[in-house]
Amino acid sequence: MKVYSAQIVRFMQTIQIKIKYILTHEVRALVRGNRFVLPERKGYSYPISVHMFQKKHVLAYFEPEWFALGFHRQLLYAKQEVLESILRHELAHYIAFIEYGPYIQAHGWEFIAICERYGWKGDVTKASLCAEQIDQVVTMNNDAAIVRKVHKLLALTTSANRYEAELAFVKAQQLLLSHTISLREEMAVDDAEYVCLSVLCYPRYCAKLQAIMHILETFFVNVIYSSGERSVIVEVSGKLANVQVAEYIAIVLDRKLDELWELTRKEQKHLRGLRAKNSFYSGVAQGYLQRIQALERTEQETKALMLVDKELLHCKEMIYPRLNRGGRSSRGCDMHAFLMGSKMGKELQLRAALEKNAQKQLFLLE
Image 1 (cartoon, rainbow, N blue to C red):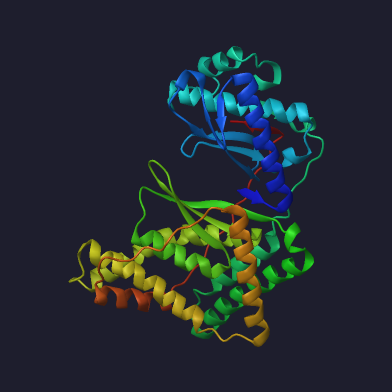
Image 2: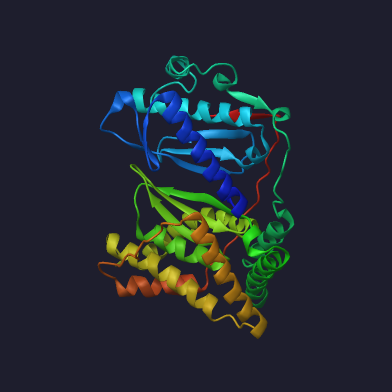
C-alpha cells in the first residue's frame, strides 16, 4: 500500500536526490532529469521512479514491471547511513535486472557482483534489517473499526428483507462519507495522509475492468489504471478506510460480474459474443450508479460530498501530478444486454470479509 502526504512527498524528493548522487558519483551513470544511462548500456535510459508504502515485513523493494523503487514510510525516521545502504541495495537490484534480465535469483551472484563492482559491502548486501535499526517505529491507524462496520452493513444487503437490505446499503454509504469528513476536519489538508493500493491486475484494459472502476468510485476513492508491458493495474487512492473497503469490493466484483453474466446468458440464450458481454458489464455499472444517484441526500450530506470531491482531487494531484488521461468510448453496444446488466446493477449486492495478518520481527529488502 503506497502512502502519500506533503511530508512524504518531500521525503520522496530527498530520496530521488540521494539516488541521483549515488548514480552519478558511484555508478558513474549519466543522469538526465529523472532518468539515467549506465556506462555499460549507452543509448538506453531508465526511470528514477520512487514511491513510499506501508506494508508489513518489507522495508524496500525494486519492481521490475514498472521500473519502480519502493521504500517503507518508516524510513522517514531512519539514520542517514541506514537509508543510504538501503538505497544502494535496491539500486543493485535495479542494475542487476538491467544487465542480467528478470530471471535471476534475488540475492544471487549477479546481485553480489554488482555490489562488489561499486564497492558496496556490509549492510548493502543484507537481505533484512532488524526493526531496532530504525530510529522510530510509526504505524498507521488502519481504521479497522470503520472498515469492519462497513463490511457488516454490506453483508446485510443480502438480506431477504428488501427494506432491511436497502437500509443497510444506505447506512454503509453514510458511514463512509461521515468518516471521510471527520478525518478532513481533524487534519489540515496540507497534513492529510492518503494511501494508494493496487487492487486488480488484468492482461489488458477491458469493459469489465471499466465497470468495476466506475462502481469503486462510489466508495469515495480515486480509481486509476496504469498500463505496463504485460499487464494493466487498477489503483485506488484516498483515505485508508475507504481504500480498504474498495479493495475488498474490487475482489468481490471481479467474481460477481462473471457470475451475473453467466446467469443472464443462461436465461437469455440469444445473448452471445464479446459485444453482448461488454455491453452487459457496462449496463451493470450504469445501473449501480443510478442506484447511488437515487439515494436521498440531506443538505449536510450534499455539502459533505462536495468537500469529499475536493479532497479526492487534492489526493489525485498529489499522487498523479502528471495524469492526463481521456476516457475510453465503446465501439458498439448491444442494447438488450446493456439493459439486462442495468437491471442487475440496480439490485447488485456486495459483501466481503476482512483478512487477518500475522506480524513478524524482520523487515525484508527485496
